[in-house]
Image 1 (cartoon, helix red, strand yellow):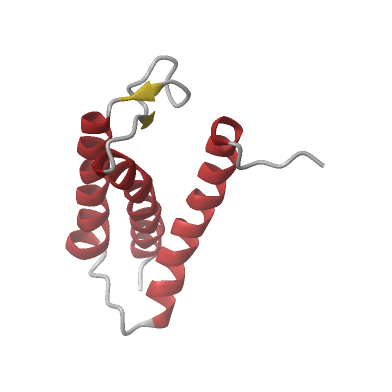
Image 2 (cartoon, rainbow, N blue to C red; image 1 turned 90 degrees about the horizontal axis):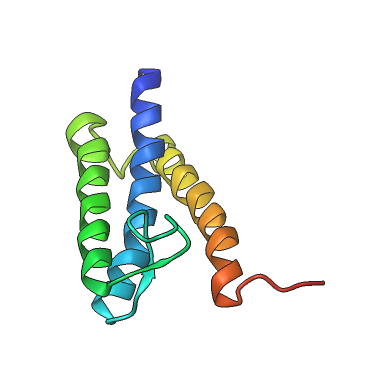
Length: 107
């Protein structure tokens, strides 16, 4: 196992996690933050832009996991590595987008 594959699986999981909110919000017809909004990552992009951005992230995840990383669900270390990438980006996104959508509670 090469370190390159670990990096591919980690970032493949991150791109996979990033595709979910964009696709779900886009399909639901809701505007959502994207890198193309003004200001980037804070302003809202249209639902169509979010669907396109989400599917781009899904394609990158596929390339990183399946084409380059030769990802196999039967090997736990591959699943854990991709899951760590998905979890870390998901927590970062929750903290970032929680500011805009009321997800961060103030104590």
